[in-house]
Image 1 (spheres, rainbow, N blue to C red):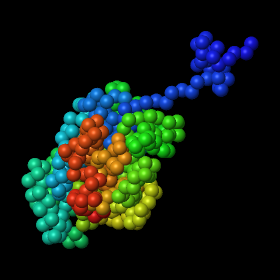
Image 2: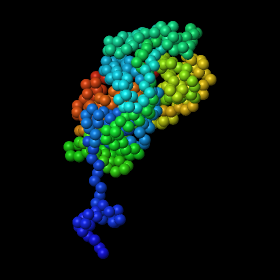
Image 3: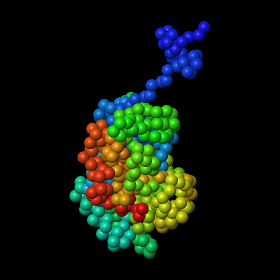
Image 4: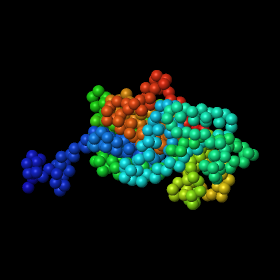
Length: 416
C-alpha cells in the first residue's frame, strides 16, 4: 500500500526511521542564546559565568578539537598580576582574586598554588626598571616587594649568586600572591560546572562560517556537524581568532606566533617558586608532577606551527643552567609551541566588534592563562549586557582607532 505524505502526517508517522528519507521532515536547527567559539579556559569560563551570574543557560560552546586542547593545555601555567599599566593591573588582579577561590567555587581542584613569582634583575638598568614597575604596582594596589640578592637566595635556594656570572643577580621583585595552577584542570573544572548549569559543550565541531541576517547581525554558525542558530556569538579561539573573525568579514589587528616551552623529566620537589629573567630570557617553575616547566621565547616569524624552535630552546636552557647549575644533568622530555595572538601593544582585545551581536576575546599573547577567570568573567558580562564591562572597556577594538594603546611590551617579564 502506498502512503501519501499527508496521510503519514495524519497518522503521526512523520519521524519513523523506517520510512524513506525523502518522506521525513528535516530536523529543526538548534537555537541558542549564545554560542561561544573555543572550548579553552576562557571560552568555558565565559559560558560558566553567563549561566551562573546572568542566568543565560542556553549556551553552546563549540570546539573543533577537544576541550582544553589548545593553549589552555599548552602553556607554562604562571599566574600573576604585576603588570605595569593601571588598566592591565585591574584586569589581572581581578583574575588573581578569582584564582584564590576558584577551586571552591567550581568544586574542582585546579591546583592553584600561590608560591610566589620572582623577577630577577642583572644590570643597573634592569634594577631601575624593575623598581619603577614595583612602585607602579603598589600605587595600583598590587602586592609587590623588592628582594636583595641574599633575600633572593633565601626565597629560592637553588639559585646561583656567584659574582662571576655573565649576568649576576642584583636583586628581584616578588609577588607573593603569584604562582601556578594546573592548566587542563582549569578547563575541566569550568566545563564540569558549566555543564551542570545546562551549557552544551560540543567537541569535534569546527565552525566553517558565521551566518548573518538582514542588517548584518549574526544569526548563527555553520559547522562541520550542521548549522546552529544563535542570538549572540563570542569568539575565544586563541591562536586562530583572525581566521574565525574573517568569516564575519572582520579583520583583526593580530599576528600569530609559536611561543616555545619545554618540560623536564619529573623529580622530587626541588624548586619552591616561579623565577623569571628578562635579560637572559628564561622562566622556570616545578609542576605538581615534578617536572621543571621552562618557558622560552617566540619564533621570530609568524607561523601556526606547534613544533618547538630548537635554537630558541637551546638559548633558554643555557640561561637556566647558568642560573641553576644543578639542572645540567636533567633530561628534557618534550617541547612545544603554543600559538599566541599578539597585538601591537601586547595587550588583549575584549568587547564588541563592528558586526552586531558578535563579540571577541583575543590577543592575550603570553598573558592568556593567568587571566583566565578574570577574562571569562568580564567577557561574560559584556556578552550578557551588550555593553563593555568597566574592567574590559580599555581593551576594546576602538583603542587602535583612537591611539589609546596599553603598551605592555615588556609585561611578559621576558624579552618577547
